[in-house]
Image 1 (tube, rainbow, N blue to C red):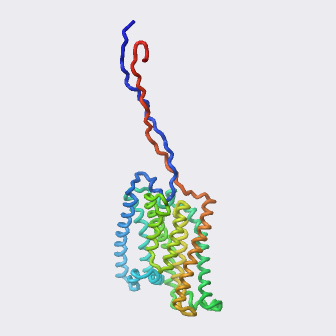
Image 2 (cartoon, rainbow, N blue to C red):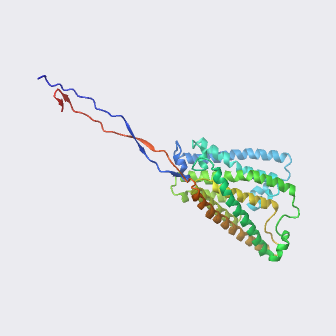
Length: 365
């Protein structure tokens, strides 16, 4: 018999294996966590850079404002920007230049948010629009109908309530005494204002939705897993950005909460944008036409303020509540996407080596 030959063999290493771990779909509020290259600090830096870009755009807008004032802007009173929102709205409703400056100062929110996300690598920036990373135009168009019906209907109802409450039904025969275009109404100025409102207010409303219901909601939700807690900073900032009286601020808070619910429950900002656009267009047109409640003709100043506050809050509750009850079931019937599927997580699966001891002339041992 030949002598035994003991030769150790190298370990046998099988081909590397990988396993796929399914990832849960993400709601709209937490889309940033699913972006490629996400890091915890990127949402914070995106918000900070958005503020920097807004400041830069404000400087540019100030330069444009100076040029406008130098070349025939005699009807522009910049002091109203430091006063209450009611005074500001009354000023912009009669001056096309003031209206252009006001809307322009809000429209720049949109490029600022876009640049803020792109600068820190939160791409694509369209994640701020919907779970499909785009604006769902058909869904946006569908939701415009309920918004128009509710806003216009409730505004007409509120005007009727204010009219009847001021002088009784007899005042219906002479509504121009207290409500409607004033005696100094200028149709040419109103035509320009109406054109600016129809063209620019949709962009202004969309810009606000992108920032407050898109960037802020998603950035805070990236750190806070409870959506309603993450939505609080955006709601507070939205209310602070409007300088109305107490009843007006409460109405703005109701509107802000409604738009957050719409955004979360429909997976995008389309439904909230529709409500925002219709509400602002109608408000600017009514303001420009001179409609409102004033003292006199059977109302004291205190009575007019109380009546205006009650009508404002009641109108906001009817519009927002009716819109939620109308649009949310519509979204379910149309099976609007509210979650974004995530790719599976691929990980290396370690495999144990197979190590034979020795091989001999007689075989394995």
